[in-house]
Length: 304
Image (spheres, rainbow, N blue to C red):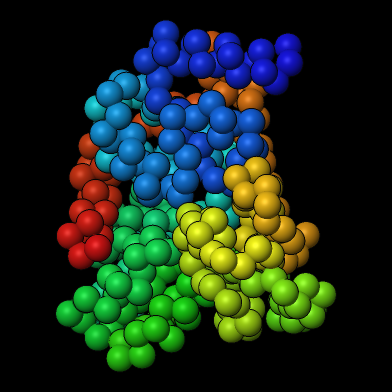
């Protein structure tokens, strides 16, 4: 079966089986083409909540599918590849953070959306990479425990110096692998290009950026900018997607290290197999977890 034939069959099956397909921006382009919604993880879960379909298929990683289930507990939620996890979301667990909270009882716990449902149950408020600065600024408490990404936390600290932000050693190993030397070398190699980076990169890399933002913000910036050449400092697939959307512009990779193996696990045949009932994994969460995890998300929506 060709890619086009597979896509045509997927479009037929998703309609027949009442399935809404969500595709994170880091997955392959041929998957984005058959998705109902594409973009950043939290925005996708919000789209799923308002979609008319009773079934949702997340083509991304597990924490994203869990967030969909938290916001749409009445829907059947599937993850396209059972092994697609997120090293950042899984590096801190509920017991660890409960122990840290006892050490810092007067701190408000701010959790990046890239965390497990279980971990969200012991946090006060959630944030996305695009809303983190705004939300932390609005919190009444001066003392903040920011988890799990210390690089995003450092970026927030710089933007909100009036807060006392405690960071734990954690984050995205893919974004954190890029170093300042690579950022400087890229800017020297492509002097006419603007450097666009994700705040999950280290502060040493971020300081050289012309623009810092979430995946969607980076894509929007590149599409709207008068500049026609860019160095993309996030997952390699973003440069690829932008090449399709802006064929008149030039996109370079900041580093070949920026490949998320977990995101690359999900393929177009995986999507097809889930729709045939012979692949993927259904995401199930108990009512208590959904209720407790929902509180920090609702607080994010209230403040954001």
